[in-house]
Image (cartoon, rainbow, N blue to C red; front, side, top):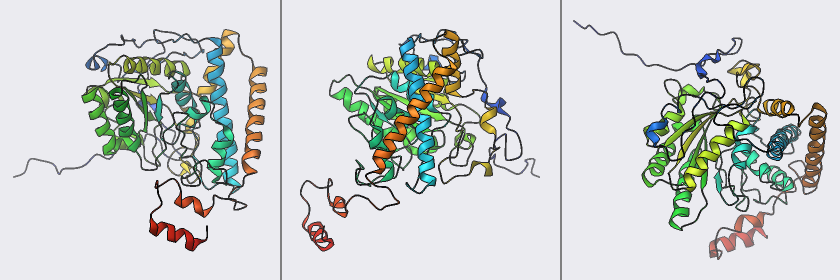
Amino acid sequence: MNDYAPLRLHVPEPTGRPGCKTDFSYLHLSDAGTVRKPDIDVEPADTSDLAYSLVRVLDEEGHAVGPWNPELSHEQLLRGLRAMLKTRIFDARMITAQRQKKLSFYMQCLGEEAIAVAHTMALHDGDMCFPTYRQQGILITREYPLVEMICQLLSNEADPLKGRQLPIMYSSKAAGFFSISGNLATQFIQAVGWGMASAIKGDTKIASAWIGDGATAEADFHTALTFAHVYRAPVILNVVNNQWAISTFQAIAGGEGTTFANRGVGCGIASLRVDGNDVLAVHAASQWAAERARRNLGPSLIEWVTYRAGPHSTSDDPSKYRPADDYSHFPLGDPIARLKQHMVGLGIWSEEQHEALHKELEGEIISAQKEAESHGSLLDGHVPSAASMFEDVYAELPEHLRRQRQELGV
């Protein structure tokens, strides 16, 4: 006689589907200003409560409250707002260009702008970022030339990567932006290795690694955590939990019964869970983690709680798997609107100034786009020469490739 019921598996499901409003109560939010800020030298095990709570600074009225308030200057606030707004306008223009068939593919970071921008503001020049594909705000904050970014998207004759990368997979050593890889999670372990190399050389530069919630299911994520913990690598491990991978809810990657931040604590890494739509919280948490890394106190893992407001990419239709108006109900709001509200409350910003800045940035981006398109786009076939296939790979071109190049006549 068998007293056991048949075994069964649990398959996580999102709390909202098309035609059904999402129940966001699963997020487990903390009130602004209520989460403690530990000392820089805190033991990783003593951050377990911070891996479940949510670091927030801006309250519902836009006031900065609590121990995590970084007390940014007015100039820093304006810099952050400018970079976020510029990133959002850039995304909108490039999506339009993709629809016009000027480029083949695009991925926006709508609703996530605060994370890349405020994090970058907390880093030093020379710190190396190992981004995934929604951190274009890093380049924009570091004032990388827009024309070069757009030429890469267009894969034209002036593409600094010579058409070798999918659009949006930027690369710039000078800007501290490691080449984006379409193979998810690879950059996480690479960042740890880069940080270890910096320490071996006796340098003071740190690494910043990026991954999405879905890609934490990849083996490289866990390998990175092990190496970072064992060698106390000077690295910040950023997990952007925007609730959705391509079309699967974050619970499928393990975010249902625990938090992604708690995985860091389990690996002996100081960990935080932070409101990713709160610019001040992002800056403060990033600064805290960067200081730990620079003082040889080891790595930190930060889970940024946010929401992918738009499609996964221009190839995606999110209305097929989630409510079309989901983002308008997301309890953490819009990062740009929240910073704007804060600045207006301080008396340093106004609706008129905001509109003027929007027009200024739009003009700047349109001008850069025109210049980039003068070098060609997919519409006119002005692409890098076939000869570029044989360049930048070997110090001396092997004989069999030399013959292939001659046969091509390039």
